[in-house]
Structure formats: structure tokens, C-alpha cells
Image (tube, rainbow, N blue to C red):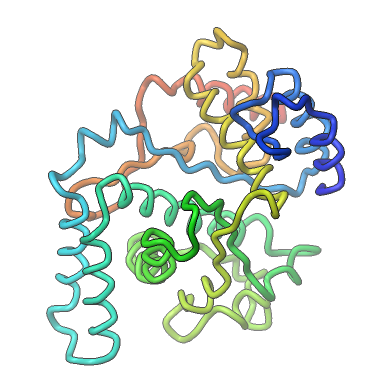
Length: 294
């Protein structure tokens, strides 16, 4: 796939690049179409899990200070935990979260859910046959938004993702397939213990990287920007709605799912699933695609 992408990228007009690097926000609709036809849609094994936060909907549920509330929620889980290294780490982590702005917290939560639920989809759809050997190691690459290494956001994310995994999967455990996820499967052998998945092992290889050096991040940028344009063109005035099916043919989400929409309610009792009526057209597209496949 990388070779096809580089070939496609080399054919872009200079105005569709930033310092020689392709950018989704700069692509013409013709180049975007070629990307899906010549790169993405020739790779059926690619799995996409969109994670979408509609800020207009989120505002209805947003606590006054989401960073304080998340930090307090973390501390509330320590009431019966005795003094220990684990307790001290959790207290330190809660302080780091409290120092983030509401915007940074929402970014942290959305990114965390994206990583965890992408793994969830991968466990179900990409764990058998030729994919089995790929679970010996797990790498997570995230496009760096800060100009400096180890920014506060990066440190909080790396230190807190395991905690969020524990709490999120308590309410919505990972689904495994007994016939596939046997004790000798690399995923189970390398990343599970008696209590389930080990967050420290699972997220050992997280890297915030510059997209210039990793083609996969540039591919992700194009897909993300295209989905953003789809969501802002639900009446297809600019012709972007047509890309939705091209993206979602690589996803395990169906018309009766949440389509990847989330919101984060007060008190963090659960991660909400958005069902806003304005996105009904997206469900219709997926339902039509399912009917055609049948």
C-alpha cells in the first residue's frame, strides 16, 4: 500500500502539498477521488474505525470544568485503595489531568476512545488467519500536533491511556472469539494476564510522530479530512457525501451502530453514543450498501 500511496503522492500538484508533504485539507476533489480509487480501495485488508465528537452535541453534556470532574472521578476510585505505589501514581495522574484545559481533555478522551475501539475492532475482524502473527507486537502512531517532544498532552496521554482502558472496558469489555483467541494466540499470550488485558503492555509502543516520516499518518490525515468534509456536506452540495461509502467499506460499523459518534457525559458514568437525527443520511448510505451486498 505504501508504494501505491507514494506513487499517488508524487503525482499531486504542488498546491496540494505543504513543504512537499501531502495534506488532506489541500486536496482537490479529483485528487481525493484518485486516492480512494488507486490507493485505499485496492487494499481490502485496511480497517478504519472513525471516532467523531460533535462539539455542538457535546456542549449539551459538558460539565463546567471537565478537567476537574475527570480528575475527581479518578480520585473517587481510590477511596478504598491503601497507600501504595499504584495509589501514588493514580494521584499524580489525576493532577496532570486537572492541569489540562477542557479542549485538551476532550482531545485526550476522543483520542483514547479511538485507540481502544480501533483495537476492539481489530480483535474481532483482524485476529485470524494471515493476521494472527501480526499481534506479536502492537504499535500506535499518533500525528504530533505539538512542535516539541513530550509535550504535556503527550505525557498525559501516554500515562493515562492504561487507566482509561481499565475503566472503559469495565463497562464495555473487549469481545473475544473463543475459537480464535486461544491461550496460544499472540494477542492473548503477549498482552493478557489473569485480570484481562494489561494496559502497560498493550500501549508500550505509543509514538507521537511527524507525519512527514510516516506515510500511514499522511494516509490517516487524508481519510480524516475527507470524513470531516462529508460531515459538513450532508446534503452533498459539494460532492463529498459520496466519499462516505468509500471510507466505511473498510469499517466494521453498520447502519445500526453509533457510526463512530461519541459524547462524554457529566460524571463520566459512560461514554455516550450520539444518535443525532441530522446524521440519518449516513445510516441510510450504510443500509443501502448492506442491502446491495446481500
